[in-house]
Image (cartoon, rainbow, N blue to C red; front, side, top):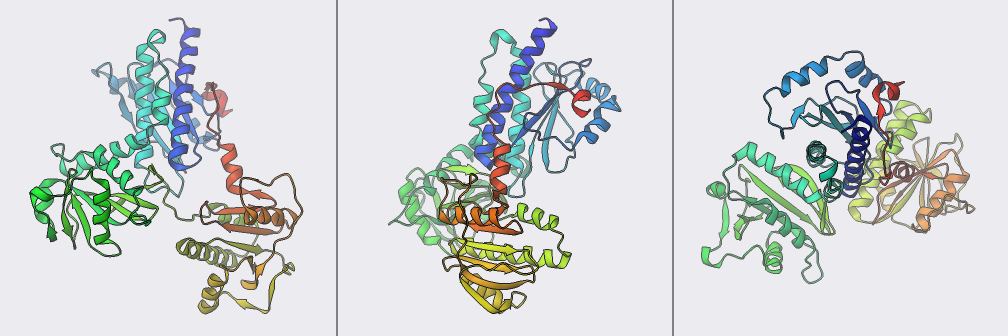
Length: 480
């Protein structure tokens, strides 16, 4: 294959995988970006594919690792000696702040690295890392097949990889903890968890814990009830298993299964190895032993941990020139209120007024304002957040009002896909540039508004994953 045709084929393969990788991770974790670093042969220049500017800000690291010193070429050549044609040899992860990375070298592609974001709302980076591992494998095998055998299926596979990523990560953990020789099969376990999560009993969503164990661990369990072997409920009888979950709701008891049927009801210490599903109504969490792997809701797995991280609020407070103690107190107070609202499953709006003299807002104005440094007043404020309208919090760390009506004129930045609380907050922040408005919705993520922009929505807009054919730039040119 001539060089120009080879370059075109590489671009096609990388673009196909990058599109699928970003789309799959976005469905699994919310808006996510992806990027790649590739050298086709030992003599080839390193090429960067970063259509969403994920790697921007890390140029000095890449320059130091790959341009100022090319010892990596020799190390990769030494590592690939005596390797089979289809082997993809893993390379050390790159230490880049806020990013997950996986690298590998093979006979078909001398070096490749794949990158995505590591957000603070991940239950675990494990499944996402498995996604990157498969991107390595797919590029090596697409290039091995050549143009004539290229199917373009790799991108579609990576887009739909969510359940497989969870399964592969659990298998990795299971092999490390108890070895390869176990009859516990993970795909049926994951199917059962998703089916149970969508099965309501008398209108109620499932609650309680179900543990899947290796039969070798059964003797370590503390059984309260052990079902007779001939009468054990089969796991595929989802409605009956859902009924049995009622026996462990809101307790320290848990159901036990070997992946085929229910073995009984237990309490006390969990076995040395188990895959657990913690059902919490409309959503739940999947665990290996006590380590949370991912969450599940609406019939699919996700990496989201459902905790309000409020990263955008923290960044805005850092930029507003507040004293460190004031900044810390405001952030802690708002985080506590958001947590409280989410636990109680009600929406609320919080206005952080950073003016020296707080704005006048229509509603119940408190004279004198109440100090939120007092625990009793803070608890009162959390309860007042349930009342229609917004809480008005000043930079003096006092509550200045509640049930406040956020007035504002319409403008082009509104979203008709969202409700009145959301758009009122947008309008108010647009007309009052020295305020930050935090909106908690019962069915949507927490939104942070500043100067008429939803900071999370603005970031998501930058992270669109349908970017088509990608450009491959030489690393030296990209760094420059």
